[in-house]
Image 1 (cartoon, rainbow, N blue to C red):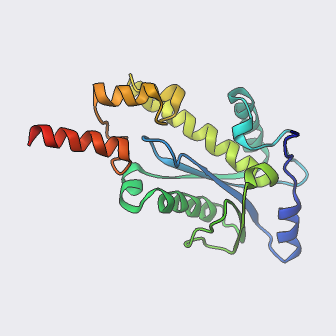
Image 2: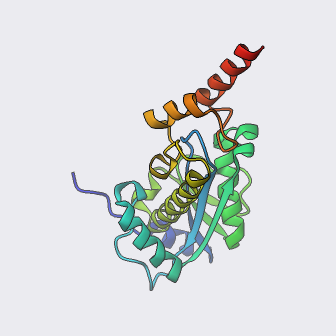
Image 3: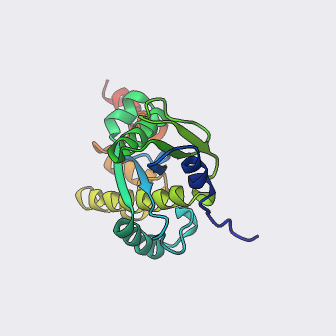
Length: 210
């Protein structure tokens, strides 16, 4: 099956309706057991769009790194996060939307193209939700790449502070290695306590010590 190629029709439509600063927005990190959720907003220059933009999930790590550098060089980019504490307090969906809202606000956008089927309620501007936008919208694809590269780098740094969990390769997702390390090494400050595998381990510890 041929891969979907992102296009600029969503951006063009928003511009035709009077918007001036149109940004694509995506987030990464909803599923992991550890680390922040990261969002990115990108305003592309129509005359300087990097070749090969695509959903970050279909690109190799090396290709994402190359494209990320190209995007940063030619586009307006803002990256924002929601912390582990915010994830546990708000829930992961609301925290991911908070990160998106922060990224959009940082760019001063007047229209946002949001990956998914929900529009964050606290956006500073009108928005359009685009299902699978990272595969079909150029600026969302660019945002997905920068968000993924940024968060992966964060998890590599955290892996050096907390070795044994495999974050440098699993990015905090619930792999067998990560789950085994949780049982053996325990819960770090970077683990999401509201997520069931982490919550269950903490609950077991309380039960044993009670």
